[in-house]
Image (cartoon, rainbow, N blue to C red; front, side, top):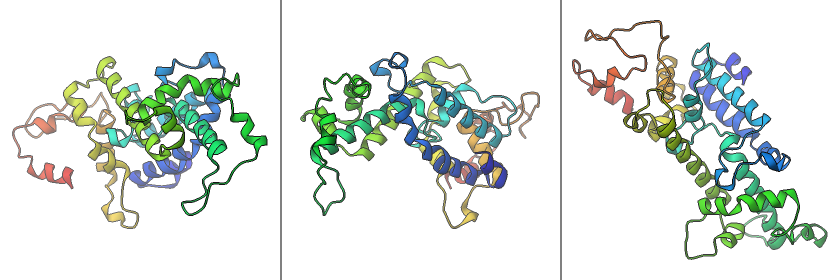
Length: 296
């Protein structure tokens, strides 16, 4: 993360690399973190999106440090900005995958894959039959419903709640469908979206950071989220200029656009708020050019 900030100058490229080549490449640690932790530290089954651990805390520090440096902040990143940054882009967040919301779900999905493989064989391609595993391996998974193993205890604790998120067809046996027929990719997407919805509800209900319900709709627009992290690979000219990108990133995370001790005045004569909201409601100037620029 530090090398990305130090070695590159294009802010949009820095965020994209951090998202795909740093944060996303650490997800294999999530399930292990849950399955090797003290069961007493686990949240209730319905609160699978509230995982906490030393690794989880260190992960938060890394994300906050990177985003704070990218946005040019000297102080800590506010809680609401961190939460928005770790929401899925489909729900309007920046899309930095965080173990808090996904570690428990990843542990369930990993164990689910093992049970599927031991009972139906290891899938190696659409044109080949699954490879059956030897009984010396499969026997460890035969009693997953009643086993005292910590792995299966954790798995069964959260299984019904993850199944409700991943399987929406009411006409099937949900658990059986989840174990042997559900797509891992679809499950991961639905888990991310459900976690983001819970974060959004928390933002609306608990935080007092100048985010009203009207502002939530504006801030968490998926189109403005994807514009921050999705970009053409081969044409740098179509990437956002740093000064525009940083304004858009700060708007997305509801950060002040300039230091609080500074005062900015609009061309209409009014003092600008630090979040830039005035620019969208100023009646002195036409919004056509600004609208077109944002759209493009």
